[in-house]
Length: 225
Image (tube, rainbow, N blue to C red):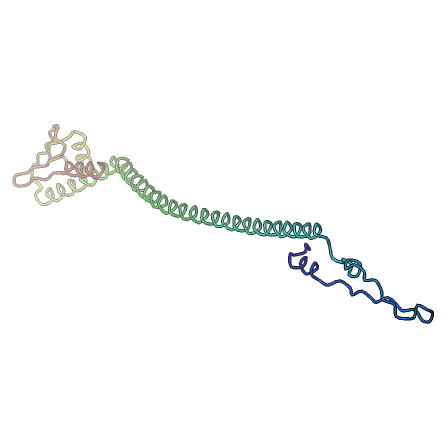
């Protein structure tokens, strides 16, 4: 770990080891007190600390290490902040995308449902029209058969009530032939005259009976339209 400026300064200002006094000789002429020649201060207290150049170098290294460490910490915090901002931007984008998709799905789903409803209604309408057109001939045949049956029964009832009654009939030739076939022997009392009218009409002195097929045809055409 690089030394801090405080550690370097503490090492510089620490006192060096104390100098020991020179040992005295025992006996001999030199045992007497001899005044000694004072030594220079530099030799009495030798320099034990680092030189000024070394101090400056240590301070420069410590400052450089501190600057490097501070720069690394700043870069780490900057990278962490950038990563957080990137994650927040991605999360916000994903939320916005999800909300936009949900809104699009709801709008398109409603539009699709409306198109399906309209399509089903159109299909149902076309199916009803096709069914009406397909059934129209059958309905016409059934209506014709029922009208002829009812007319024949009414004529037979009149003939039984008044055997001498003479009736006149007019209408389409095919309906007249069908009526005569249904009446059997009673058909001899009917005078049939074919014409271009759509209905078969039977008339007596005070009686008028008709098939009213025109009304049936008009109703069927209206249903099929």
